[in-house]
Length: 151
Image (cartoon, helix red, strand yellow):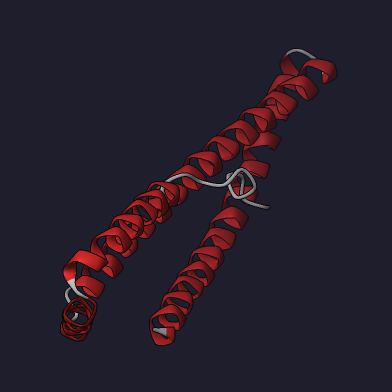
């Protein structure tokens, strides 16, 4: 069980490091390109309209770049949250299915039923079923504190 958790953490960490280094290289190249484009636009607007309009045009270009980067980050963050939620739901379903398919668990349950008797066991099973139903309905509801991830 712990090996699966450790493998998941190491795989996500390796992917994060690769993506971060790739993003840093792309950001540096984009920064240099943007600097040259802004310098060319500034000189062009400066010669045509004057220094104030050239500064405002440069500010507008950087504002648009900031909006594009923020939008991309927001979309990526929502996609990762959606994938994590789907993976958690699949893991919960898989764990429940594998537990009920365990032959040792079924054999133990049959021995308990034989030992106690079915008439005495029915009220206990009814209470357990209600508790299981409540627990299953609560796993789909996120907590208020965990709704917003820390940044």
